[in-house]
Length: 310
Image: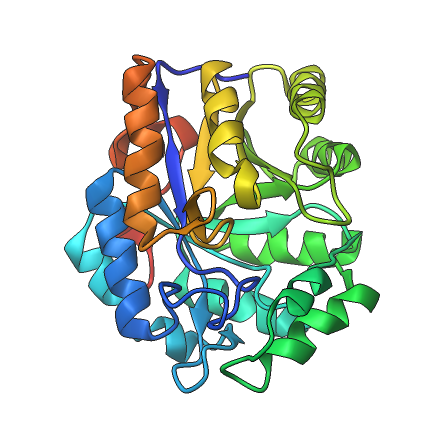
């Protein structure tokens, strides 16, 4: 693993998994998404992982017009690296998923490294009344849903986005996804260093257990040697413990309301910045330094904020 004395803190601002009913603090309008992103950067996040939503009802959107409502303000207000999703909203076509990143030409875009069952239907049973009509069916349909990331889809995303100079946050939900990444690296479609984001705790992927975290790290080490950086996220209540474990072992971390709407047991996080401050506080207590945005750019070999399209 490409080692650093400093940890890169990523913050995933809103995502497409949680719905407005789940938390009143989830940003869904462009104004709030932008403000939350800027505040997270001011709290110390070096990378901002961004989704957009439809302003009228908070449903997921990959329409570049919705990203245009907040990306320029984010860029003007802070120096953080912007990372645009290509996962989009569950059930979107590949054209829809790629549209925002193709327009924005960001420094980083996320890239899911394999298809998987992606089941968040259990959340629907915990809510008695939804604020928006799309929420309940959106959650319930995932009981019979496959998040599609075929080799052809991945290759297309890599090829088209690489042509714009974007690099990738490779989201790996299973050990096999690391081997998929190695396949594309061996073919020369992507260049080191590879920024791997281990994803734990989604039903259908690897559970959030320490043994799985260590196994994924060990496998990445065998496959990529010094050519990768390893970050991780733990969904829900696993967010802070997994981030802390990975940082202690020399890795990087991701927090944010996309991954967990809580700040502590039974306590909703009031903002993304609260989660950033909490993990940075933990890292400071452990004498682990946090990377600035420009230090993250250097570690990841990014093209720089002046070379994006927003």
